[in-house]
Length: 171
Image (spheres, rainbow, N blue to C red):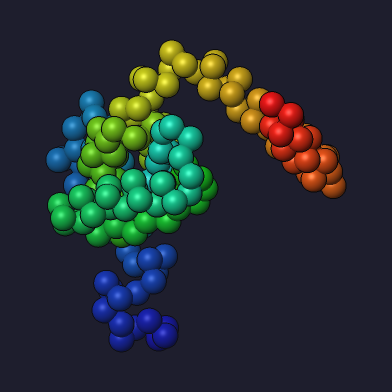
């Protein structure tokens, strides 16, 4: 007898539960997503989303919080973790809903892309960014250079400040 014998199946840790049987007669072979959905039923699944427009972590928090409440109102049991200035993880207790959640997310204004099971789906905001794709990359390079310069000049901010204020007085 194992320590898990008296525990209801639903209360067991996920790796101890027997996966629900997949009824292949109901699976449409032309839709691999259907099979994936069924294989993820009852399993925790993570959906990654990227917020467009180079947001701050606080902005990402606010935008994705709205997404989460919309999903919650649609009865999706979902947890949200902001994992970077523009990345968020939505954790679903039942992975079979991941694709419906993905469909909702990619339709959102500020959604750049959504990743489910290693597949990346471009979001609504991706189309806008595409034309500016190379421009965005250059801006990022410029930003990193600026940051680098600031830290190397770290000990002389006063001189710069004085120079600027002196210049103003002369005018």
